[in-house]
Length: 607
Ligand code: GDP
Image (cartoon, rainbow, N blue to C red):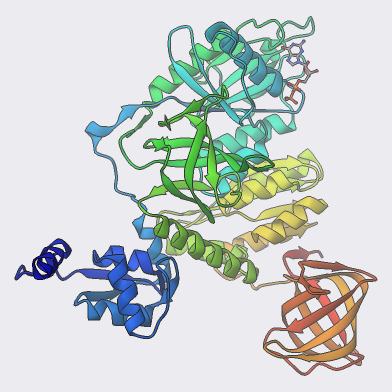
């Protein structure tokens, strides 16, 4: 009886009889979760854990083991090891192109852009209210960052409820191009303004078609014709001016023209022939995300392809999770969300960022592995903050890469006249290989939005007699966007010309952002020497460059390994506070030395 049972068990395991064992190629990254290892070998987890124990490793199925250990086990089970690098963990994300016959029409995704106070928010609210109240009984919408409406003719449209160019561009910068159509709102009593131009340029840079909504048509001062002629100057030729950009006169207040606007959008969408495959593993983009007190991390995701279902395991940016619940824009629980549908996703392990891409994967281990890999990669990237895009690098890239034959730039100047002169000069520069393309130009300080646009397109920002404001400077430092300051057009032209021929000698100007004095030197095991300092001026910043000065002589230049305030690693310490600093790869620090902290991102050329 006992033997019989044993035989049955062996058979169930698939090992006992004389059937040939399948030898598998097992993809092995630098580290792997035990259960995933078992999964990849198609062996039982318990067997793998047992084998590990026999090798002296007491681990559970959820623990991570290193590749060398895993290799031993794989060989023990008689499979073949295929070592893959860290980045290969991303390969489990399904990227295969959809077959034509699997593609089904999907709703367009619309972003409303335009100058402040021209009525973006009012228009979004008006559209939603008009459509939802008419549609669902008692349908009270919930703000989740996006909503869907159905037009009179039955077309479904998805609106992103986060107006503003920064949102649009930062999403694009993070690799999520979600918008299919931009509605450019221009107030009829005001016409084209700086942010209108900005919006036009953002839309053009992203290659997204535009529809012009001439708003506030109810006002006595409304002059739609002036808007149309104004737009001509910015190469937006509306249909009324025999161009091909649709324009609709609307009023967010009276509701006039709203249906017409929606039909115009539907028409534009038809031309675009937007399609997606609802049958595949979902991919989407995060529109908004926050940590909700009661519900934990919540993200509004716009599904772009496939269908997101309850129970799906996914990775999103540096986070992962399992869909616990999906909530639509009406606050209702839904079981799934197909292409172009915005839903709130519950069940995340952390809060992702707007613009992060969500991908459904097949196992929790995979999701965790990818999230961990991304987190590490992002950390390394932040550490190597010097990886800024400089003019030279861009030019080199433009030359190396046959597809990129343009050097994109963003220009801000003190007056319209100089901005225009710069643009004209820039357009003349260029040879067979590279051309300069001005993505956006404007008058006034360099803003965060300029930096966003520059980052999204990998462009430097040129400031002519203007400076970047504080948030913009910070954003540029963080994102590695180069800002160049000029006060003589000739210099600027010269530099860009030189960059175009690959001859630009780097000219770096530094900004001193702070000084700190070493009060005491400690030895910390595992870290080395740590300087106990007092920041005497400005700020000490973890990501900045540092120099060690002894008697006013520079004796070392490098970066910081740590910046600590009490026990915590911090990114910044301000003047008057004490902190601990240690240099990367440098140990000869003494009491009384001065640490100079500087940034190098901004380059100034003046005559
Ligand atoms: P946003 O900054 O572009 O989001 O603009 P808002 O939607 O906040 O609108 C700015 C101001 O314009 C508000 O005071 C609105 O009440 C007003 N407004 C918006 N649309 C209309 C409209 O169609 N007609 C009139 N008369 N006022 C409008």
